[in-house]
Length: 195
Image (cartoon, rainbow, N blue to C red; front, side):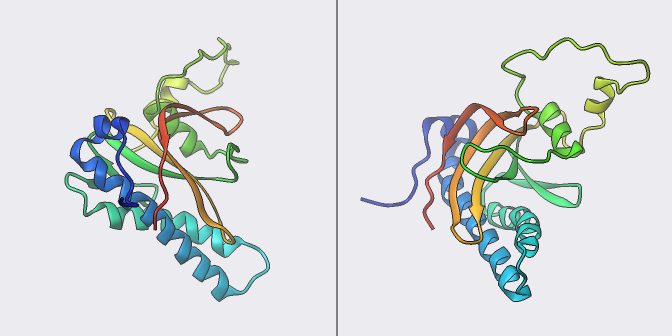
């Protein structure tokens, strides 16, 4: 029996025949990003994990773009200086989570706009808050969200990875980014990690 990951029905419905290749390539790409960041951390020899964190942030996009270039039908688009891979109206967006089931400590304005514009509709409607005079216009925020085409949906690649443990969990699918920095998954599954 093979240890190679098998594409689920959800992955096959979303990506067609490319799903089988994606479930093999994506974990390897993120593992490669971890290895590159770990090498940078060890090379700098600092007590803090800045070199690892910054290195992993950059390497995750580069490793994914390089590995997914082999998958038929993919293309890339530059977003905030990073290559984002597109396939079948889906954009692969890597997101390192601090721990299993955890939440992001800080959510950048760009990340918030990406999820608001290209993520699924909220499962629960937000409170109808009235903006103060001169406050931001939500439609203006969404319109200036990104350089991604309007029809693109985010495929979130949420993963847990540390310098000590490496890649330990990877979930992919469509998710909302909640105000507390956690994700509410709509369609998702845990990806098998085989390196």
